[in-house]
Length: 402
Length: 116
Image 1 (tube, each protein chain N blue to C red):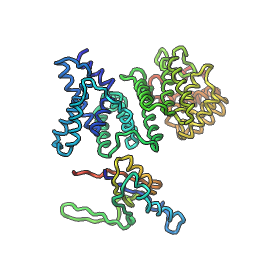
Image 2: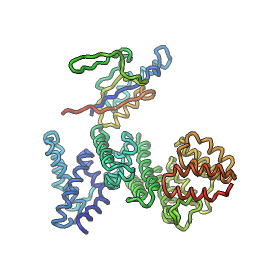
Image 3: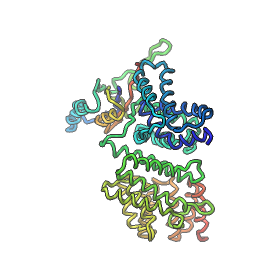
Image 4: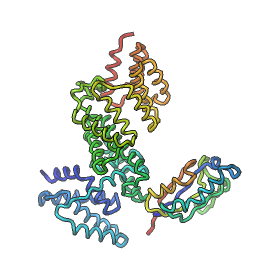
């Protein structure tokens, strides 16, 4: 392995852990980030000269601690930060050759997903800090320019320091709400990966699964965290069947079940069952239960799915969940009452592609071909991906001539 | 850390002195210090008289201009503040959430500049 390959591999696997360890020691997100950056640059020089060290992550931690001390010195802030510098120096000196880096990543993800940060910033910071995406890669996720994303990230790190956002796992009184924020960020990363499709540079779906597993490993036994991981696994299980030979979206009911990952389905269902036994219901467990019903043996039980969407509305009262509820009811009880229910959501969902796609579907089932065609046109115009456009166009073209 | 909590609200939404809600509402303000002592220490805090009593001033090129009232027509106005000492933003936010104004208006939580 060349030094830059070794560095890239090490950062990809260990960046979150290293950064978390450095923040825990310096108490400063930006300082830790800068120190790790400088240590990486100097790794390229040293590893090129002397070879890749036995423990690359240990080398980086040691180098970054020294860089952090240098940073204090450079700022002429030595007197103010005397205690911190001494502590870092002592720690660096005592570091064994291949140290076991304590895993502080739970604190890191709670900090990155703090509700005092804007939601998009939470997603970006999590991808950068815990998944090790470069700033350019994070920018790509949001279709932003790299400098814009760089600014967003450094503003966030500056706010964490100056507003005193603690580098801490929240206490029991705030746990539920703060965990909800973390799981939502992970879910947003997953859905973004879904939308970008397999052509994206980094598989965000896999990154989201990695994060959800990490939260479950570092804080086992939380029903909602288990539910969120189960939801991702059960959805990810179908990744191989989502796109047809022409790259078009294949809806769930028409997917080739042989292309589903049985291992992921099994893991997801087992995990969900364990979560439900804890009897602490929440929105992610409900969504996972819906995902499980979609992949269950004899095809989906729409009455149960409708009942679950009704419960989900207690947690998420918005029109999108109401639309899914209406679709499940339409499948359970017939297109006519279903369509009426869907159309009642029109004012809130006028700009939402799945609303028009669902309308088109039930209009076509009721033989209202001209209306269905117009609804497909609207859905196609709003579709976020080529895959969705291809699927919708095929449906529209399959309508009988009127 | 020190935090300044700026209380923005619509005075029309505050209970009037003759309403039954007024007593308990004032009581909430009066007991805030002690109820929230576990998360923050109140360094100071005041309510302000209405915006109709405000005077805005600016000095440009040595010339002082004053203006009656606030500049912009806004529904929410700065109506009071707390200056608190808290360990971190989480504690400051917990304190802010206990201020009655948070239920009808907005509490802006700002870390105070440290010149040390």
